Length: 455
Image 1: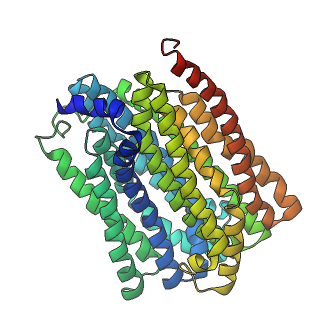
Image 2: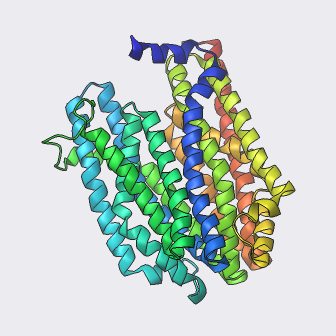
Image 3: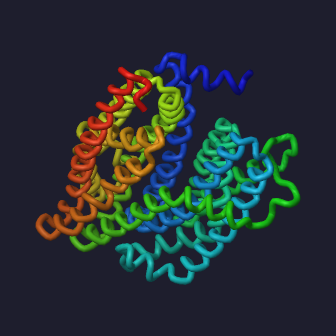
């Protein structure tokens, strides 16, 4: 009866209550995840220096690329597990678990070895200089040595959510934040390990969470658990997992490419500290984006269930409510950038020039931020109701269709400010495209609502 109660409530409970019930745990997990990165930046900025912030920003594309390979396995496999559990095909679900572990180990090792061999050329290509590469190198050497741990941690966390343990997945994320927040200042300020201390704290925090995850999946009472016979790669499972995970992989890979262009543009027209300023701005905007992402995760099952049940009025209700909340969140970010930019930027550094550049960049970057929440919700809404192609198109629209050309053109006319202005311009244009697509589809949805049989 318990398993039947959940979908029934999705179709009958008040939309506002449902959205809070599903979104709050996801928002907590996403906020914790973003704090994870902010804590590192704050301790590095105050404990190591302004150039170290720029060095950390150089590592973003490489970490994005690592995350892309992680999502290629984790997202695809977790979706596959959900499907197999729904079909009561427990044997295949168990094999997916084994394949996730093996694939993450293989990809994690290959990525780490290649990145370590070519680390310096990669970092210089990302916009590094002799002043910043040394910091990025020290940070990434430790991170890459723990790359397998990172891949396994994120992969198993995705499987925890898929196998009915969203709260345990959230606890694992929160645990890494707390452990990292405790260890990072000790390693940086007490042991004087510099930026390596921050990286070491990150890897140790993920190791602790991974050990807890391994303990959960070693429990034979769990529906999904480690056992003999699952430690072999199966062609179909690997192919299906990678096929499903290709969309988030491409999105992360595109984000990696865009960050490289941003770093290169800022290095050319603004210098090393401009890259550090972008690192700070990116961290601050990221936390609001992650909160909206958590809200989207709460909307997804509600919209998907009611769309499948032909409860179209409930679909439009949850969509409107999610857009309203998301707009409130991103508007808060916009107000922060307008009213107290110096206060929030000063959390990361005491360097006057870096503060000035970060304040200027923050105000420009978040210029169109109030409508970014709408754009993110629209993209996720199409994914929620099974229109994956539209969701992928909208997700890549900002990055490739608008931001890429802007980054190639505007800096030639406005130098460093051209790089900064490229971002709100892409947000504005992407939101317009999202609005047109959503209005067009919303009209179809209203027609279906008036005549539920017209599917």
